[in-house]
Length: 235
Image 1 (cartoon, helix red, strand yellow):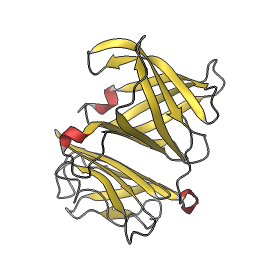
Image 2: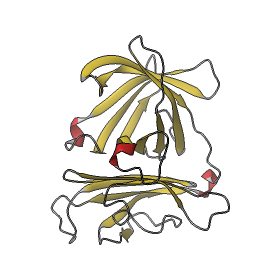
Image 3: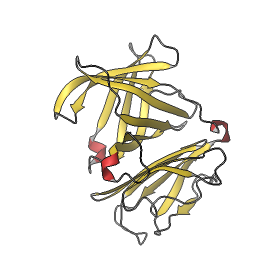
Image 4: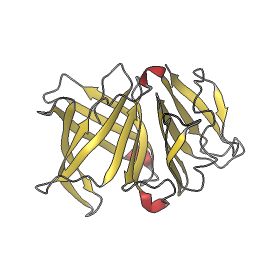
């Protein structure tokens, strides 16, 4: 999920291949990454349906990344903090080598990880379209986090991250075994944010309100269900 170190980025996956199999892409996979490397990675099965239910979700996770451009080849590490597949998200660490493709604007990521379809550790390759500029990318963005393991805020405890870059927003929220995932976009001519997908019972009420505004770092924003989110980063 490549991105420049000091700029927000939008990365779109072009394909994934396992071992010697043919490259395929049966998901809409987008990664939003902030300047301080907070990311939300949402993978939705296609064709997209706004209310496709849990079967629409392939995988969603969020956390922080690091990139070593001096390594040969350059190497990135992705540390999960909340994960739709794994309740113990911090036990999950993805990493891969990043090599520019022969095609401009593309990066090939390669390494080894467990194939979710087989449960076996396999070599993989993913091709990413780098830094796809959203129509409103210059309008800035933010990172919001919910962290309430004990439920002290009056709502059920849990973890969540939402990232906005320009006119795209993605979020993942997990409370125990319950998961909510959202992807929203500002569509030209529409009066408000359009939900590309809202998955899980908490999706409509658990994420922060006011997607179009930019909160100050440290500012708290309340969701409709009373859940508190705090702004970690804004630009």
